[in-house]
Amino acid sequence: MVAGKSEDNGGVKEFQFHQQLNETKWQTFKKLIYDPSNNAVFGRTGKSWGQLLLFYSIFYLILAAMFAICMQGLLASIDEKVPTWTLERSLIGTNPGLGFRPISERTEEGSLIWYNMTNATQVTRWVHLIDEFLEPYRKEQNGENFVNCDFDRHPREGKVCVTDLSMLGNCNAKRSYGYNTSSPCIFLKLNRIYNWEPKFFTTPQKGMPAELQQFLSNDTVSQTEKEQIWVSCQGQSDVDKENLKGFNYYPKGFAGYYYPYKNVENYLSPIIAVEIVNITPNVIVSIECRAWADNIQYRNSTLNREGSVQFEILVDAAAPIQTKLVVDEERNVVETAAGTTTQPTSSKSPS
Image (tube, rainbow, N blue to C red; front, side):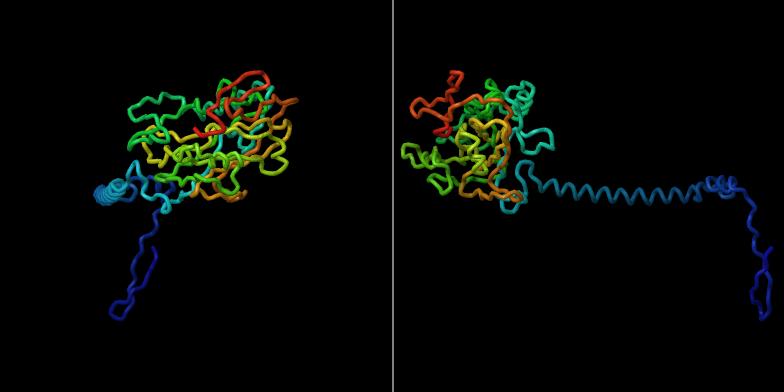
């Protein structure tokens, strides 16, 4: 026993402390799990555990109810078709980006398109990537809300335009999209921005290619046919320009009747196929393509590129298969050295 002191009537009184029980660690552990002296489990009696369970049940039920009320309020304010913040108020903004396909599935290749036109395996690889990209456009477009559109016939509300792959001219699967020649095709597509409407260039602009300026100056072309987002491509440097013969566009621009984008079911973004004609083999050629519209800002910057896209092409081959650039103005055909003749939508007029 251990003595202690306590004052009592001015005197000193001794009292006794309980001596520490001499228990083994195993006995202490068993007592922690269940104490028979007061029927406690893990230090709590049945009543104590019941009170604790009741408290936390009520607490979490209240939390769950508050969360459900908040989520219901949030979902009630969200439209599945229309974003809350659009155009200038959104993070996306009002300047659509321009993208291209095919893009290598190998991250280390970046924006480089590299193939040997005499190697069937390499050709098949790029053809497969393009086939995957075009798969949605190959599906049957005969639903209730599909309509045939034209420059004088825009889709009504809730309708979408049929996209015809025959407009892609030389850039078709039968020709392996040109990847078995020195004139491969790439495909351009604008990013979707809800309710964004392009402001079209219907007159020639500074910096436009001569061919496009000539088309816009043509008085025989209707004003509605000029309502397109034009596209032009060129080599990044003078050396790049010397290592290719030119470009054919199928069609020449993104038709205005595809806009504005309203998130309508079955909508397919318009695409443009660009045939890059007669690339010099065994040389990396850097190419920039840009979109032309009055409300698409253009910036040729490596870090902050706007309104354009840049990529590289390397064709490995001993000798290219020659292709004439474009076209007899009257016949509107493209000829190859093999003697075949194809009928493109036209690189001299838009779709």
